[in-house]
Image 1 (tube, rainbow, N blue to C red):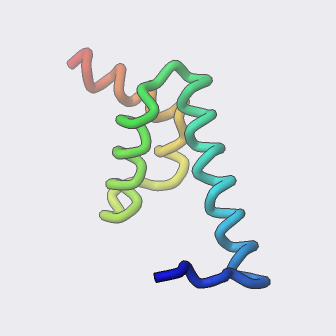
Image 2 (image 1 turned 90 degrees about the vertical axis):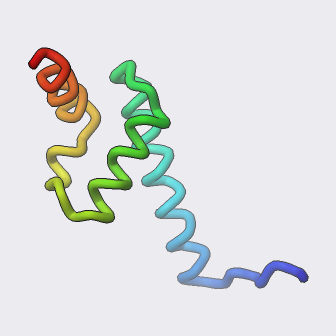
Length: 71
């Protein structure tokens, strides 16, 4: 079955989503995080609504992870 062709706004939306995902991955990489673990956590929290966006930024997430591992 051939894939449907994307046009106009659908293509733009797909490009924006892809750029956002790549930005998350690059940010995790810059902060020396395991990208898969970070993305899994972010997606889980977003779907459950259990964290504010500010808490999911990679540098904040890393700090919170360190605190939770300490005690």
